[in-house]
Image 1 (cartoon, rainbow, N blue to C red):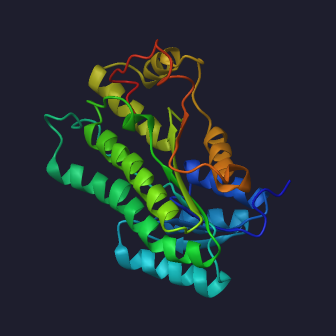
Image 2: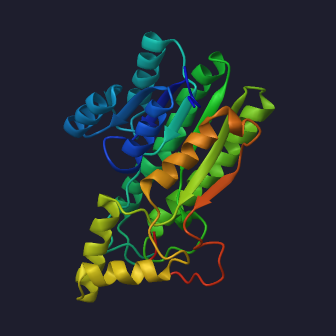
Length: 270
């Protein structure tokens, strides 16, 4: 099946991790893909491997969003899917509501919230001109539960969830034929989460392996979410199979949020 054949897709933060896997899924299903990232070397390498375009891009820059949409329109004449995947976790040694630095809070919000807002705002006109499409915002389960050990991150991802609903309603009321949904991953084993576990291990004076074992044991299904699980969810929401789905949140977390056994802890809070 070519579930997104002939669709033009932008995936931000796609030089590695979830974004890279998501871009691969779109390529496999027939889409024309533009990946963006601040990491030029790894982004170029990924684009060459996948056979897609790379655009060096700071999602917190209004001008660079305008340039990206102009590039897309000039080269392909259309845009059908935007995946707002780029995001940062921020430092974990000072991340509680009591000791988070204002500069760290502002940096996290500039990428995780303003980057998503700018992406939605910049893409809506071209999506509409292209006959409609789908915006998928990558949020987190931290948007849905208390996040005292990652307070700025959790608050930023909650803002993404609210923005998603507002964009969905706006696009519905303006008959733009644009759907907007958020995906809320649980713990996906990536380089970013590994850095978090290393920090937590140092704070608690234990090994990273102990932290990983503890986290896995707290997940009802007993294991980490795989990048492919998130990519599959993104692909579904981007496809015509989800044509009547907008404003929703799709939780992909191995049962953490919806199972009564879930108890947030320092090591599981993402």
